[in-house]
Length: 135
Image (cartoon, rainbow, N blue to C red; front, top):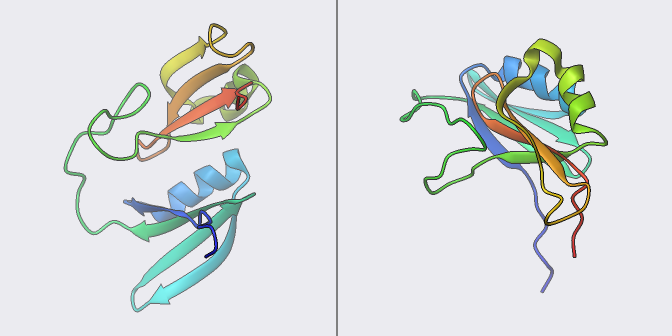
């Protein structure tokens, strides 16, 4: 039996084009496939081994957008990206850096581990992290 391999994370978006532009501009994603379904499209983006599958939302959000480092109810809290320098990445994001939780140092756990959290244009939480290492 083969080991499962991560395929993608699917996002229902109020404005898929705006989400595509944000992740393409700031996190190196590229459009790799579009699947047409009548009047709708599913857009696949890839950056390295991570893929996002963007759908047009069909319903309004049932809860307010999360803040800080993500929601604490069951479900996905945030998506995380490793960067060389958290502060430099926040500066690069410029006005698009909607910081939800300021940079924090986790040197007590891993020397040099630092993270900040931002919201994408639709309020999905993104962790920007540097220095994390597995044991």
